[in-house]
Length: 378
Image 1: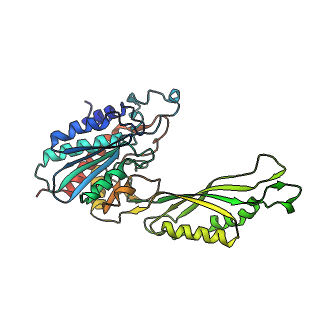
Image 2: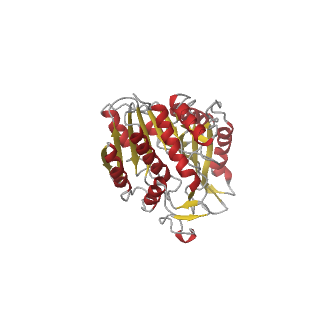
Image 3: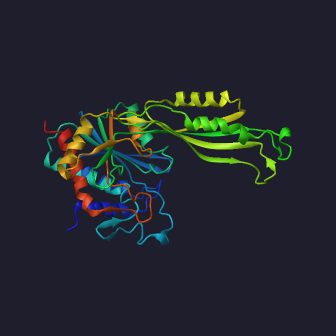
């Protein structure tokens, strides 16, 4: 017999909700949540569909957050089966969004249904924050909902984001924070000229090289219990006209910081400019902050989730801040405790994305057990 969680995951996967499309996924969720007593609010922003659904008016408020949008499929002829036709092979459920993160959403919905039916007199409140703009620019999604919640004074206490955080086994890793991301486009100016007459030109590649070496070797901050040291990496470098006998007039370098709460945007920018200025470069530098770091120290939420994982799987979970950015960075601005937890992430964004079926109901049970730990009977 197909479990309710599996059936809902398959139904969501069958909707080709490539970002920023929702394709009716949230309407399906609303149809399940309203009979449970949730007040559902659709918040449209541009092409993005967002859902805020809340049951209860007392504290503490536990929020389940996620996204119905998925990344593009890539070459569909390379998939073994239609990416939007849920398929089973070798104990795995295949389809775009199977791991990232429609199964998590399905598990959250069914967990809340089981919990509220078994414990109608639970304390506190439960909410869902769902967007169709997590895989895209993330400018019309969760950040918009968070701004609205802040403006009307809604207080969030705990949030579980259903991102795929596990590694080899369900529950072996949860994310209690993420590093920030900040990019720079550096243009170092020179003077173009014939390569046979270097004294009449000014080679920006040569001029930039010592500064780039110093930036690459700089120690930006120290590692700590939760974070690796801040990393500065060049991603692209381009200079020249394509001819072998021309000194270029400029060189363009793209770089990125992945930084922890031990550093600040302003502090990192100032240090980069100081190094470039020390080397006497003529340059322009355009900064783009993609997301600020967030951190949830060990506390009620991490303990409740860790205990639920241990009870369901026997695994002692690891807290980690590795990986890319998520919508947790927005939620952390209005919620003191944000943890990401979901299925193994080995296939996310890949051809033939999948989740092992054996993880699906235990994932739902972990979410339900966390509710039981945080929202006991009154």
